[in-house]
Image (cartoon, rainbow, N blue to C red; front, side):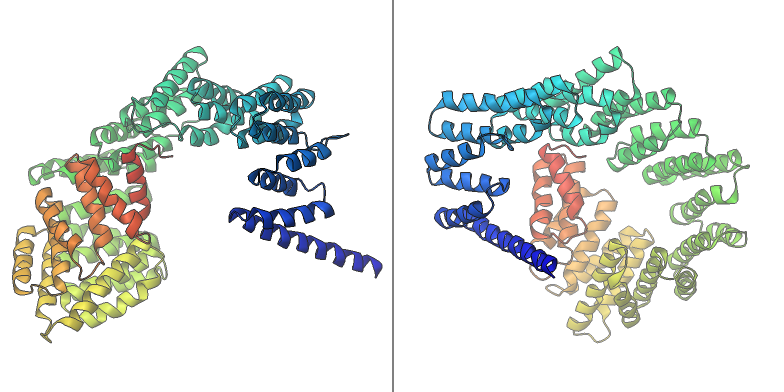
Length: 598
């Protein structure tokens, strides 16, 4: 019983201290130092060895310029067997605040001497110096500790301080020396490098790191240095140079892992450096041993060609597909399946040979494939049927996908396409019913698209005077024409809707679709005009974030106007924090500002 009472008393006292300390910290943060002091002093009386409270009480005395009180408290703690030698730093700084530099240095040296006796104190003493921005003393502290014993934590702290002081050569040298001995720290150190490295290859830190890595790699060749050079060139968006380093890693490493090259190629493609992406994919096709990955690279290369091709080049791509199929006759059905789907899509959506595409898909569906492959093939078949305006047949296949893989992301995509197909048909109520289900879709992109379409239908059905919803049906027809790549007809119909519905809610929807069609047609200035009309509209804002994002991309990637791009990314960052484009906008904004991105 007595033991239980003791435990209860202990926890009661602990909780009381915790609450009092929190109250004192609040007073301190608000600048009410006298109130904070009274509580800190009370805690000190009851718990004189509480370092956190000691530090807070000293800081409070100093804010009140009660330096004598701070000195008395610190000297009490530093008598006899000193438990906290970092308090010599606090005492020295207390003298420095009183313009007594000799006394300050005397106590700083006492702290450093204790590190010479035992490196175990280095971190707390070094951090105390850093807290007061006494970086020279912090450097001496860690250098003293490292003379006694190698320690990764001390090396990292020392390198960070070199960086804070602007001694970049020393910083890079310290980090590189550490990972030479302990390669496991390479990922953490990349994050530290990113504080200094930018996209600009002329940046001083970039040049220093590049030089340091090249020298290291010449002196003691190691794939780790190639990896860091690849990382540096990637930050600078010099993907071909990064590829040279990745290729060297592949040649020199016993484990032949080509996945980093895939990632590099994808990144180059995202940044529209198609020549670099093509070169990497070709290398992967030639050198990858795993058939599935070789085909993955082949599919990516073909997609690059498809994206950039004109109608005149489609026959050449058709021949490329046939060469691929001939080259991989020994591949399993699962391995070759993705590129067969890609071929069917190409036939229908680029060459316009929908019947051949459907026949190809029927052959696949009649072969031995798994449920996920079946769902993928049926999805493309349904998409082609929509293209042919065979809406009811398409709906059957989308519904089958829902049942094949219930609650999966592909099933949610099928649900969205059921809504979209119903929209094309003019069955707006059923479309809205399907879209409501997707509010909680696991894919944020699907959920966002579903919300936009739901609002589009709902807003226009409520506000249209015409109960037959003529404007909305015309808009759905224009959307279908755009899906069918009949862009000229779509633009013409959209202009008609605009002329007949000035000031109506559907105006934003029409402008947004028109802008996106013009963007696809690479008519960037005309696209900007439509996007700007949406941006200044005060009627609705469901397209605002996507409008600003697309405008930013046009300014950045097509018109070489980084300032306007930054301005539009800022709109998303500060006005649309819940946008699906928020993270990408923030990343792009930081890149344009010159920050490094991990």
